[in-house]
View 1 (cartoon, rainbow, N blue to C red):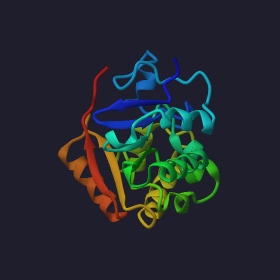
View 2 (view 1 turned 180 degrees about the horizontal axis):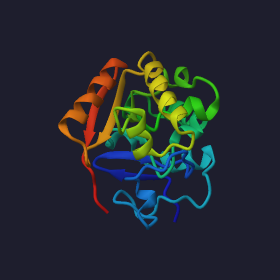
View 3 (view 1 turned 60 degrees about the horizontal axis):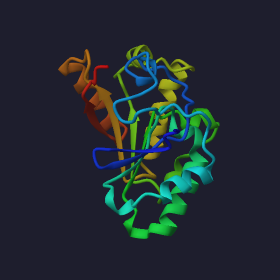
View 4 (view 1 turned 45 degrees about the vertical axis):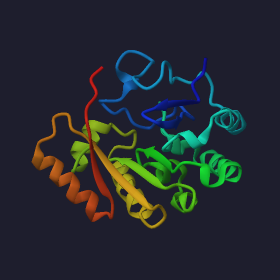
Length: 206
């Protein structure tokens, strides 16, 4: 059974891809099993077509969810065009009954696609949550392990700068594992300098 969408704490999560250009040290992908605390098995046996994903979502009662979140085992912005198409289709069908839309991302969309995708999010996405994971390039690369190294850090910061002009709520996140209060404060200062807010996430052990 392929998990395209799953429920967690009152929100509906959409899992569109296995692809990711990072290997974050805390990621559920790397802890020796394919499942997660959120759903039994998020590893997709194939990338669902946009129509498959839409059919899956239309079978849900959207009005019961507090949020619709694009976040699965992979980086959702690999499929940013399909993601935007899905939001348009859902808005057309559900109107104001569609819950607020959030994307959980590593902030590498513009690096992945070679263009600025943030204008596509305007009017479609209510919140973008970007993994910051460190206040310096060195810390970020150690925790996030982006395929493109330092370019990943720079791309993530630039994506945040651009996103705040397109999306009402832009949040940067850090996981609290092995982070001192001083380090958390440096992350907060960096996020706020980009126009974003910081959210500290609790580390969930395997």
